[in-house]
Amino acid sequence: MTNLTPRQIVAELDKYIVGQKEVKRAVAIALRHRERRQLAADMGMEIHPKNILMIGPTGVGKTEIARRVAALIDAPFLKAEATRFTEVGYVGKDAESIVHDLVENSITKVYSQKLKEVESKAEKLATERLLNYICKQLKKSKPQKQATKQLAVAQGATSIKVKGTSSLTRRFVARLLQDHKLDDQLVEIEVPEVREEFPTDLELAPSDVEDFRGAFADTVARVEGKGKCHHWRKIPVKEARRLLAREEASKLLDYSEVVDEATKRAEERGVVFIDELDKITGARIEIGRDVSGEGVQRDLLPIVEGTTVMTRYGPVKTDHILFMAAGAFHRSKPSDLIPELQGRFPLRVELTPLSQEDLERILTEPQYSLTKQYQALLATEGVELVFAEDGVKEMARLATLMNEQNENIGARRLNTIMERVLEELNYSAAERKGEKVVVDTAYVSQHIGDLVKNRDLSRYIL
Ligand SMILES: Nc1ncnc2c1ncn2[C@@H]1O[C@H](COP(=O)(O)OP(=O)(O)OP(=O)(O)O)[C@@H](O)[C@H]1O
Ligand SMILES: [Mg+2]
Image (tube, rainbow, N blue to C red):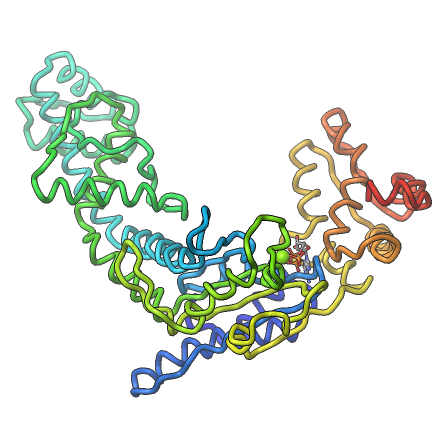
């Protein structure tokens, strides 16, 4: 998903986020600006990223936008909450961990991309090795030889001579392997001592970075000839194939190259999203720990301004990292941030409160909207859930009413409303297989009408 135009980025975001046009455009432009910057840099130009600050009330899509951007862009991405940081010298994560975590996310991405590139080659090599193991084993065992012969006959071979490991046998075993006919047979293979939690498939989640490091250490040890810790294991062919493919893949990858490439990408194209920036204004962080918000701001400043951070992967320059920040700023204003940090977020965009119509659309339109989620969940019980238009309207109306009467929590209100409306159905769905349930105005009123009227009660429940 590289090189999306701003229009394409907005179109992608539109699939998940209702309204907030201005913010989507600003984010799209900043991301594009970042790609162009790279081209300009090739012409010898120095162009600084256009950092964005998103401001808007609670529950209107700030964090959701960040989450979708992360999935959308190919560049290394990190989302961090400002409230998680403590000042340097205090226990906890300090601001520099942003850079460290960004590089690790980048490593994860690069690593899995490179793995994909060598995947088919690794699988071929693994199959060859597996064949060797199986044929060697066949040579040793008479009954197995017999079994192969029988299998061959059963498969339609008229006569087959199993002499040692003739190429015929080998070809035949290869075919059986390919057809997954041997998956559950046991084979003895020599495997390197790899930590158990090493990722088992070729996909890596960010949390697997630890394992990657473990694998990295293993590889270094192996290359350097230390700790030659191979041992024999008797395991099903299916698993052997996987283990061998993994080993071959890691042999094909140059890990220091992965780290270098990942660091470079983080420096040139990294995007960092700092959420809850408003919570670190003032002397104390709002969550009540004895940490000065202003102190955290001071620690963030050089990173946003551009500095070189020493990480365990080497020095990382932050000058060209794109920073996006968001905050509700309901108790404070952006001008309460220290001036230098304010200045580093020149683009300010505001998210608007959600109207009743927005809430209606949020219920139904996004790719994974709440109504779609509940439909999918109940379908697993064999219950068909239908949301009538008037039912959706009614839920949006009640959400708006509750937001006005109590605290305005934006689209989050829809969660509590939906949960209440469907509580009874969720409870009894297992016994209602084959039924069709229509959620219309009457259904909604029947299930939460009384709650809405009771102001005191609704405050706690809805
Ligand atoms: N504009 C929107 N379109 C679609 N879904 C939305 C929108 N706004 C909010 N939501 C949904 O409401 C929930 C809360 O939104 P989100 O986490 O983005 O709030 P926020 O603006 O970050 O609020 P806070 O300031 O409290 O962190 C999410 O589940 C999100 O999917
Ligand atoms: Mg948020």
